[in-house]
Length: 149
Length: 149
Ligand SMILES: Nc1ccn([C@@H]2O[C@H](COP(=O)(O)O[C@@]3(C(=O)O)C[C@@H](O)[C@@H](O)[C@@H]([C@H](O)CO)O3)[C@@H](O)[C@H]2O)c(=O)n1
Ligand SMILES: Nc1ccn([C@@H]2O[C@H](COP(=O)(O)O[C@@]3(C(=O)O)C[C@@H](O)[C@@H](O)[C@@H]([C@H](O)CO)O3)[C@@H](O)[C@H]2O)c(=O)n1
Image (cartoon, rainbow over all chains, first blue to last red):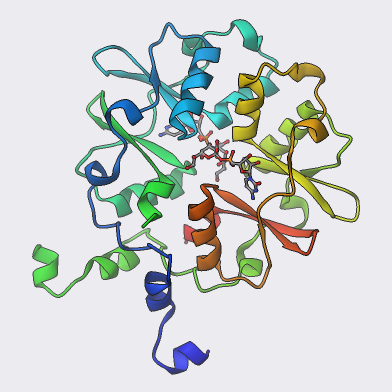
């Protein structure tokens, strides 16, 4: 109320708050902020669940893409998927990732704006999105990447 | 560049974009947007890992709090923690949640602003925060709750 009396709106506050990077990165294109190359968590479709989990941990985005050597996307597997697999009582120690992955995966084109991608994450209740040209994987972006300074 | 020529800044865009709730909720207090009561994922410290995972799935926030009947927080367990437990080769089928949880848990006071909480999530690389008065759990808030319309 005090700030409002001084003509300082909620929007000004959110955008200018120290440490709050909100808004600053949102007009960039996804291609400017996405993880590329070795930072992309990925395994091929012959990998075991165990190998996929090691890759998720190594790259620290909470998911791995399953794709072939030409980077054509086959599926995605997240920390949430691991929990659901476990809930279902699947024999985890011998499982193959190809049998457990979510086929396809929610993706955006690299030219899309960060703000559009954040909206997509909210509407689909996900925290990371694949970046692809058609079925060819070019990057991965996490919610944190868009808000961080 | 076209939009800029019309005096429309990046910040205006991010805040006004259709579907983009960004900024709108950020001056609310965490107590206004947090999940409370039955929406809080929680188990007591006698629970098995399996019971904890069922609770995470049921409440759909990607974590469960471990607390006693007076709502005093003992720890937290996330989807990411499940993956790390699995990586370590723990015997998952007989595990107790108390042996695997992260003791304590990152928390904020219910009077804190949403924007502050979002900044904390970014700096700690987490997607959800416990809301507590001292050690007493009063709610849980996910990144999505702050950005969603
Ligand atoms: N309020 C919270 C939230 C989390 N934690 C703890 O902080 C650690 C990291 O939390 P996480 O939710 O497991 O975080 C993950 C992780 O695995 O570390 C999840 C993963 O899906 C992905 O989102 C990555 C990215 O690094 C995010 O940038 O982040 C965990 O030990 C968790 O118990 C906590 O103490 N208090
Ligand atoms: N780019 C993406 C991202 C995710 N998914 C799929 O969408 C589903 C949900 O993704 P998640 O990452 O598992 O989402 C979770 C989930 O368990 O559904 C994770 C959990 O830690 C928590 O963040 C909850 C909250 O509901 C978020 O509001 O959301 C999964 O089957 C995943 O394979 C996808 O196809 N493409």
